[in-house]
Image 1 (cartoon, helix red, strand yellow):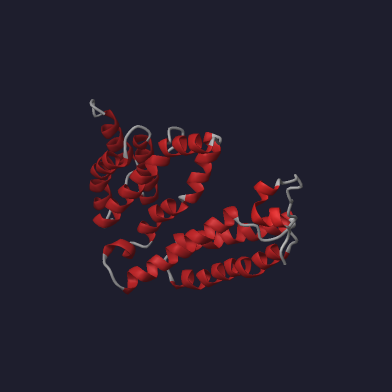
Image 2 (image 1 turned 45 degrees about the vertical axis):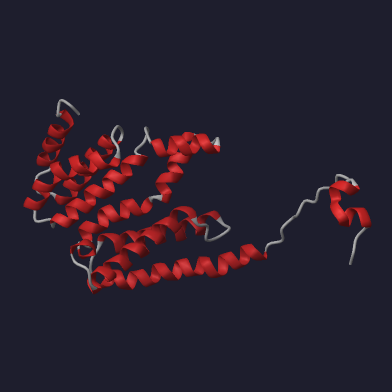
Length: 235
């Protein structure tokens, strides 16, 4: 960082992407992820904002959108593989696999990815408080929940129907995230319906399954059993 090479490299990468917004976003994310491997969130945010703000604003992107994107990328730096400090500490405490913990952490923080994309597709989320902000927040929230369910939930016992439902749910959620029109609102109701199916029917069927409770058959002394054990069972 003392030589300034990462910052210069970031400038070259963003300029090389030209005015293609999708390419600029992808390269900006990679630049921030690389910085996040060795720096805490605060300096990552500052450097990413310095590098990305001028070309993004020249491309017509609102300044609030750029800064929120830089902030989300900086937060993701705490999870950047393979040097995630968060996953390393958590896996050590839980005595679990580092890479399994890292993957689970990324899934749990899926909202970071949807917010990174959502601020560009739905800029009203961060431009000005109001009803439009609430509408954009609703769409991004539904998309985030839908993608999370598509990755973690189980909708059917059979493998093929389960995968099919999850694939449809992921496609609908991505449509809501990537398209900003009235159709996204209609699609959001379909996503909520699929999630509602899981919450009502799947949870009810899972709760109705018999559970086997293993009892400890080892004999207890009267002292260990307490008053009930010493005096016998009281009905």
